[in-house]
Length: 415
Image 1 (cartoon, rainbow, N blue to C red):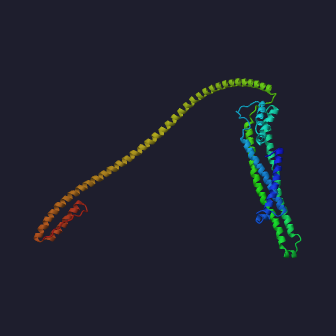
Image 2: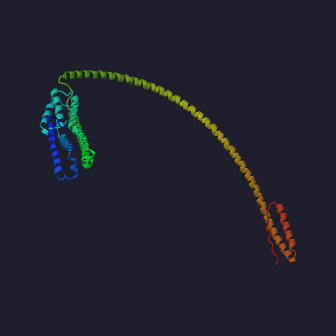
């Protein structure tokens, strides 16, 4: 997010430091403890040297931008202007606010928030008015966004150049491998061909690996810078966008005329509203009277209609109730007749039971008499004739009572 000569110097310093860091890293890999490891394989060809140096340069630029993000966030947390009470102040107060900002440390004034606040205050102070401040705020925000976008041009070039160098190393390695190759050379020195192919693929692999690292860190830092710009926009919107009165230096007469015209318009509007209110009240009273008459007529009609409906319903209900009563009476008569028939049958059964009781009493007496006769017959030796007589008597009594009852006869044998 650096801008101006200071940003250019920071970028140049980062490039110089990146070249030195890249050269130191290559020397350390070639001559240090890593010279016998797998890492030394990727630091032998001049193309690989160029890739590493470009990577360290880009990495130093990203670290410089990361430090700028930290400084910008710290500046946003500082109080750049006095607290605003929410009331619009005259544009002439912009000079005092500019002096307050000038009293802050230089690192605060050089931050994105400090430069944006200074630009807004200078605009209001020079114009002596804030009636075009919204356009200026959009312009300043767009300028900062464009500056932030253009600050990544060098990083985009390096991110593009590293893969190109890798492909160049691939072409040089393949050329080195196949240049002057004959069957005799293949038989005697196959290592020359394999070494060239290894160089070809190693340069491309290293380039792609370094490019992915750069793209990741560039994405993260760019998001952080965009967040800082969003914070600056929010601070300007809350502290300066509505802080000054809107209007030009020669607009006092226009404002007075506008106030007079507004007063006349308000008086005319008030008078018109009073007249309109009176008309509305009259209309409402008339409407209320009409509604009252209509409501009374509707209530009368509704009552008559309801009475007719109730009369009809009651008549139908009475008819249905009479029919229901007739059915109930008919069923009651049938039930009474059934009960009478049951009573006759019960009376007949009662009479029959009385006859049975009389027959049983006669049977008991007859049995006693028969027992006496049997005893007498047993004494005189005529037992069989007595049994026959007893059976005949039983049959005679059964026929007389007209019942199938069988009377047990106790027969005592003579000793």
